[in-house]
Image (cartoon, rainbow, N blue to C red; front, side, top):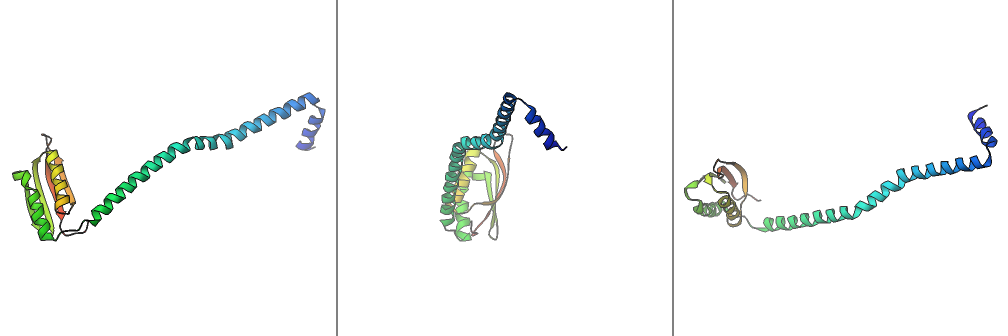
Length: 160
């Protein structure tokens, strides 16, 4: 006798009430497994879909703003190296003796000593807007007084 025959013999030997109870228990277990494996995960994803959609929309808007900003920066024409050097030199005047400029071909190195953070931010913004250039390298270190020391390198006439 195999296991199917044994199972069928026991099933036939059970009273009708026990068979119904056993079938009901099996159906309940099957429904519970179906809930845990199929429905509950799908409902959890459905619940979190709105929040994920809002987060993705926010990221998309941020990326679109960055794209517009990048396109605006790309549209700004570059100055020839001589003009950019002159303008960059002019942006250093507010920093006075705390900034020194040295040029090798189209590479300009600005050495900064004890420059306040606000003044550094204003100078970098002025360099970008007026000389149409951005730093290619920056090696800055904050000193004990909270000011900045280091070098900033620009490549003049290079496309940004």
